[in-house]
Length: 315
Image (cartoon, helix red, strand yellow):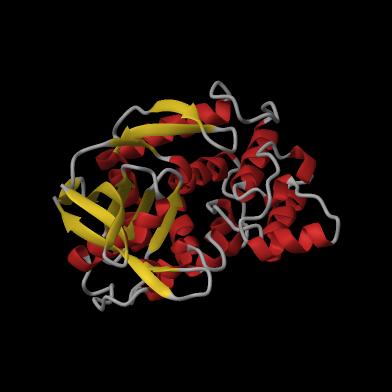
């Protein structure tokens, strides 16, 4: 079984089993660890956006808006301004969002708001891009504007699309932003991401346009100093990636039409860079630098001294 260790000097501090599946053209091409099921969380956002755009009859929106619509963004000014612009385009207000307010993930932005005695709003929620398109779809279709319940027509259509792409009927739970999330085998999630990779390769479908927008604008899908952005910036070839809560990470490699789903069993996201590095080094040598040096594998203390790291090991 593959595990990821965090070490501090000579000491092992924590151990995290992990699994991953790479799939192309309906077939598993590589597997690491035990088969597991997991909630998909935010790594399902491209599929959720795909359905919202379908209900909206494929409005001609700018490509960066698609990246934000599939984002777990950091609440930086560029993110909140764009979410507000999406709402305004569809004649909606930030008060129509139902994702909930939380501080921006990007700490300097949160500190700046507090210094100005400002308030955190739903626009700062990392899911506000997705929710902007969801409420727009509900309004366009004449459905209730509270789009969150699993019985809502929009959520029912999303579940149908998830089932179609994953070839597996998901169990439902409630995500952090209030809408349904989907529990699925890791291989089923990889299957959906292989469909995204194939759609990006073809470059014609709605799902392909979403994936290409995410690949072109990772700073909108993610944010400053975030793992998603670092992976896209380090790769030699285009790819689309998306983190999900609970130690989930998904990737679409359009040049080889491969989808990848990774799960850290403990849910500790800090272990993800090691798994990503191991998977891409083995699976995608044309697109991933093989050198070991990568800041995401380091552990530093509060004054910046290198005191440990993250490493892969087989048990």
